[in-house]
Length: 257
Image (tube, rainbow, N blue to C red; front, side, top):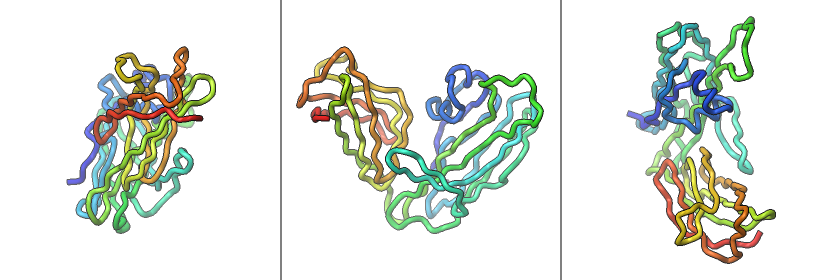
């Protein structure tokens, strides 16, 4: 069977209130939300392979209103730290639109329609968009339709694709740090959160609670506030990061801006 993300996304009013952000971002930072919700999506990440080129996604409507969902498969690439999505026929998702009655479920099937890359992981997204009724009086700014992008990764024809990390840290104006991850491998990595310490200290100098995807061969940078501490140039810093491939503990040398 294809490997899939084990979390269940629960999307609903409680999620909107807890996050105060779009449902897409909420889904990223709360991958296994266990609260009262309108829609349940499982799995939240799909991993295909030449041996298993298809998978099923289960969507359940826990609300008391019918839900209409539009589906589109897109390619996923990155440039200068920004995501780029383009419609594609390489990955199919069916049905492309459906309605779910209250208390009922829908199975969404996805399949790869091209050969896997010989050496590198392929990346796609399945975009789920809830279509709101044309007449919906009384909606507030938080009562928006579902907007969720499910990542789909395809293993190469040969071997197992893996990320390869190259971390750097440098000073920046205003007592800030720029932490950069270069993914030199042939697979993605998801950084869920991280902290930066002065060696020997248990109090974080800075850090972020994030969910950031860095695709194979791509680079991502975070600008981090460290006020009131001004880290010494050339000093050593300790990085503690959590990723979908395991925890990372490493020391870095603070470089110039």
